[in-house]
Length: 101
Image (cartoon, rainbow, N blue to C red; front, side, top):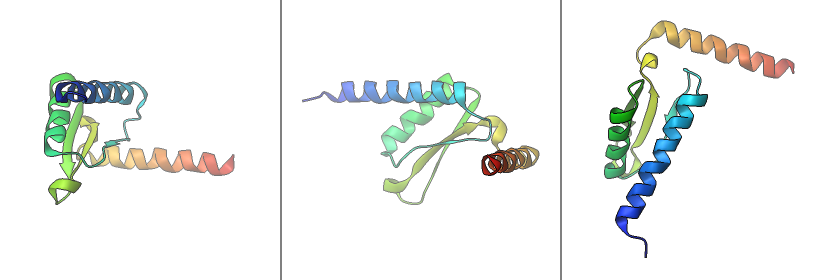
């Protein structure tokens, strides 16, 4: 039987790696959307982000406790209307290139 502390350590290491990969490869217009997690695991995600990743922002969405999901994004994405239009423009241009090819 796996001990709870081993599972928790694995969880934290896994999401630490996910954050690192997101920061390394991510476009500023993208987000990380996690599946439904327990309130404890959501809290750990928020704390991990807060302590180690100052460029990122996290919040949870959903009405019921069992269906709440955590979203991680760059702080620069928050309520920045000019950035929103820039991301939309990049998205449209990139899809047009895909359609042409």
